[in-house]
Image 1 (cartoon, rainbow over the protein chains, first blue to last red):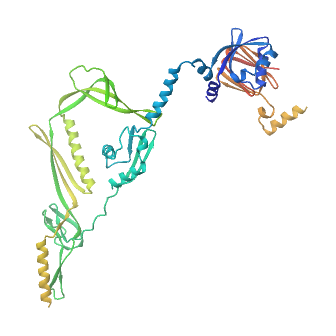
Image 2: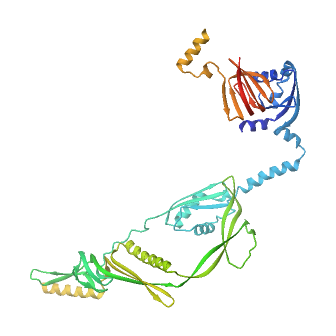
Image 3: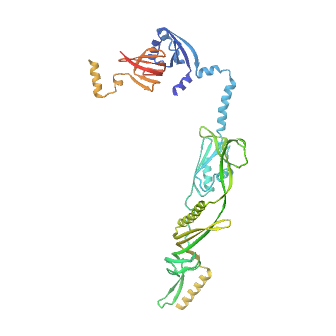
Length: 416
Length: 89
């Protein structure tokens, strides 16, 4: 490849060789380091290629070997330029091509954003537009450092930005803060723990507060489990005062949970008929051209398209997009669920509910599911027996605090 | 005499013979091309025969449409349909 380019650059000749001792001529060339290539035997003579520079050195060898050389063709850049020396427009066209290429490479034709999860590409591109950065912008007008700074200051969730221009593409890489933005405030307002659901308590560990229920007791939703007002007695077992605390405990109870979900007897199903159409769309800025086979038949078509921006040399993005369109014909029909499908659907619904509980960390003790027939379909009814935490915080209302303060005051008085 | 000692030495020391003794090195790629290294010169060339002089022997390739893709001081590449090769004194 390197040699071929070098030969083209220097220019080379195709020579016909005849005479008394062609082999001697070839050996002489070899010993003088004259490079000959593509040597062929044709029509009782030889043909070979030789560079222009070497051709000037073979004259003494021709005499020595008693051969005759005849130039059959001239190739390479020097000859090409010489032959086309009068074609001024040709040269102008070539020059303008490079000029246009150079001119177009001064703009940004693609903005790629990488690493964003919270913010969509559209959001960020829209923001960039408000900052005056858009497709078709002059490359030199973009200050990457300033851009990084503005993005970081405008979006506090983005903790790291790198902007760089590669070819005609502006590449922005961001890193978002994945952990929570703020440190959660430790709450210490007094509260009670109340039951979220009704059930039978199986075990409880109280860390703060006064337990109001015991293991084995059944509670209703809303019942106080652990009180946040702790009475303090003196040695004579008289109430001295009541202290407000933030009740904290693990209270587990056996609860039951049920659900009902309808399955319609008729479902709409979609199948592809197997007929396909292909097409493509060319978009040049605001103009677009669409080529696709015309539709036939009555059925609806689903179209998907894959868009691709045209690039030159990997990084040179042109303002041209090609969409590859695939259209598939489909039919919609009504379908009665078969017994097997119904069974599968029931299993699917139940499994989903079960997974929900497992995800929450709830222990499932028992579960059952059945299907009930209905006029227009079926009902899936499932029941679960669970063991779960039922305590939930409930702030102590001001009146209660007042009451406890009063009792505190009373306690103090009695102490006096 | 000296030559024999040299060959024996090269054999015993397991030295590459093409480097030390200047023996010809021939590499075939299928039957369509062959690269010959360490040759001295071209004796005969036409589209059916290529005869080369090596240091200690002559080589002759027979075939059809033989053509020399390139040749220089060290090596030569011949392509075409190679039918046979023989060594001569």
